[in-house]
Length: 257
Image (cartoon, rainbow, N blue to C red; front, side, top):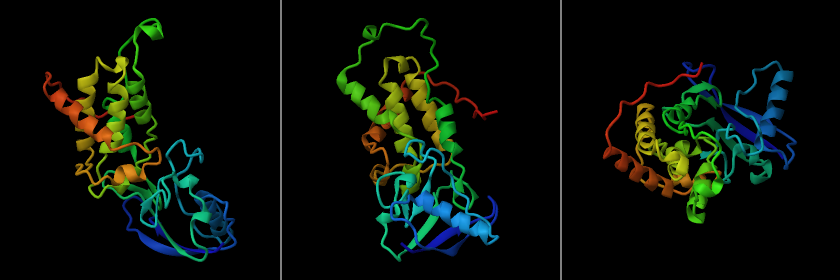
């Protein structure tokens, strides 16, 4: 298979970017999109050119690192991660536009790589359970109904890839934040910090510069983990609940050492 690639190129965070045309030939239809980019980079190195920078890690659809926008769609034409997008999904001889996730809170680093640490800071603001539980409790002492268990597991599978943010016309991070709050606030272990967690994560989300949700639903449509938009409703309810409790000072942003 042969393709023409229109790839976003940007030398650094502060440098202006532009599209460059590249051609790849004799691509295996079973190659993943990232493997195709690997082949392109090998060709660029052989010709003395600069390789295309992009993020990847597990390449198994687990980590969410491979954040690319392909033909205007986060991760590509299917509701999967970029590493699980295969060249057989594209028409032979077609032109493919490849660019990074676009959002004010995701500054470009180089080419197709962006800084998504804003999502990490939302987690640092409250996406955890810090209450000391002492000895390992008997699982039967804190029963969780099958319905709650399913809700928690459906939300916990969020991999934090940021596709929901890139797809949202407003650049909102409500699906990501809602998934984390839904996961922890429904567990018995998450109850002591429930209100503080909801409030602080929403405040941090706003501080990072993400947009507001107006229920377009694009976030859920592109989510590779198929997380439903109902977690946004859960986040709104939990935030309203937290506003009725005694307000606490929003913690300073934590920076990883």
